[in-house]
Length: 569
Image (cartoon, rainbow, N blue to C red):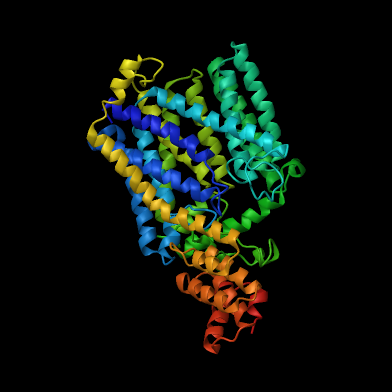
């Protein structure tokens, strides 16, 4: 990307997109106030950014970006292959399941974000990206205070009784706060001579760690500890030139991490402090995802479709703990979700994307020893995201940062190969006249490409968002006809159809419930909930015996280890 005006525009769009996506929620218009709105904004930004960036398509042929382009192409081909060769419903794979929205559209948008950020050649981009990350942290800390003091201005259905932030879940907000805390710690150590920064940083650290603790989510504390350890390593490495000191520090951190890891597995002295019951449950979810990936090795079961296969692929031990009726639609591990949903191709291509980030870190660390606050902040934020990805879900508000930071590291590494780069153009270092000249230097073709991209991204995501919004309105109306219409609105969604069918059956509208249950089984024959509803309705409303027998056989096939299901007649 050699056109400086386009480079600058792409950089600023990327800097804005991260905070906007992380913060944006729609509590008054969506049944899912978090994921559906974030997907809409992500798609709009991503397609606008890639449309603008690709006006400099010749840059994609340059040697300096060839590896990122090849890896991105591999990931894209893997995504398309899963979409084409998996048997899950197309719209489910494209938009993702209700409450997740991590389907094809989300991942191709994240890929565009990664590719564009790896192409940016402005140093201020990286500084502003970290500032944007910190801004989201501050917003969520302040918002967390409102939630903890029962002054939340948003009408959440908060069943957790603690902070949700703009992520809609204590686990996600605690993980993000852990990342922002590590970044703040890097900023603190890089500005020890500025007492104002030191005081502000310490206040932020204390308040944020308190909120992480109040979230009751251990992953936030884990990310914080990992981040502090990484920042400490780079600080000691920069200030003490003797290698044995950094080696000793690394050994100490490694041993501590090992003991903590054993504690998470109920072994060693830290078991009581670290182990949580949910860790054992994750072991079962991971095993189910691994089995699913093995049985669909190349292409997986389809994006966001692991939930349709968990019952079939879980281990017998999962029937004991967490129990036969406890199911999930995600592995609670981003890497295993890739394997289960997209197969070996997507799993390997995702690892290659992360490898580019790790390779960039390795190259810069070999080159320099000084404590570069921007670089250290990029590293700890990236590592923090990967750490939480091992035990958590790829929530869009978090995922945007994982992909942004990976691309930013690739970009930063290239900039640090040479000292001949120019800093980004900003209003602070230009007169208003020059600023206007830069902004208007974008060619009509570039403006058109970005605008067309934004419109395309918006139109692609809008049907899913509107269907969710109509469902929200229908649920509030309480009218049977409106609910039925919302359940069958396109793009169809198994969870939405099952919920409406269940509500209608509970209120004795069995004929209407049966209609939707039949549509749900036709839309997604692998949906256990759809067949279960159809079978349950058949016990109250006469249906053809062949149809009832089919529902029963499908239930037994979809949940082969559940004794309660296998004994049905």
